[in-house]
Amino acid sequence: ALPLAEVRAAAAAAPPPRDFAAALARPRHLGARPGAVPVAVIAEVKRASPSRGVIRRDFDPAAIARAYARAGASAISVLTDAPFFQGHLDHLRAVRQAVDLPLLRKDFILDPYQVYEARAAGADAVLLIAAALGDAGPIRALRELAEDLGMAALVEVHTPAELEMALAAGARIVGINNRDLRTFETRLETTLELAGQVPPEVLLVSESGIRTPEDCRRVAAAGARAVLVGEQLMRQPDPGAALLELVGAGRPGPGAPGPGAGGPAPGVSGASPGAEGPVAGARPDAPTAAREGVGTCG
Image (cartoon, rainbow, N blue to C red):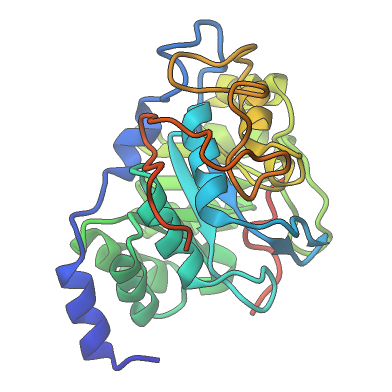
């Protein structure tokens, strides 16, 4: 690992961060697709999970991110944890070069070093897991550091006690994980039960177990402004097409080709290299470049 001083310098020299919270407040897919689900989508890029093992063998983070951008994702989550998710910071760097959307570094963030590291790699937000940090103090310290660097902090909770902890830490964005990290069981009711305790000024994200447009509408009705979806998209032959289906788009909007419209991006099954055209949020000419539970969204 690089010395902290070098990582801090790299974070300071990184291009300005994108506004993660603002992106979630204005779902990209809605403008061109009337009738689509009324929540922003944070689409996740990950190779594996502790509950499912390897999810995607033809794993090209940049290509998958471009497919998500075409399909209207508002932001992209990138797993960088290696032991459980086979992730790497290079995956985040590759996605940063591929799309202009805000990026969430999804990992077990426990130390300020990792926050600087995230900013240096191009992240616009970091995940802070209440269950891993254990107290409002560490959550607040890491949240404030992230915000000092221009990033957002998505504080993940699963229980009323964790939600109370997150709010005591001043969380501005709260993610309710519908998956029980002990059993891996998912229940959308977790969001429905906890959402009423989230103040209206806090941006609420529902994570895990989001599989259909109706799921999106249910959590939206409870107060969620965004959903984070990973495995449900990554397991499909064409993650971009799967995202279009999830948001209830029916067909691609302008500048957002779907299945059969030029083919999915390289690294996505059935790809046709060179078939990609310019799309808002994507850079089609860009190069491709220790604990269970985080990122096991389905």
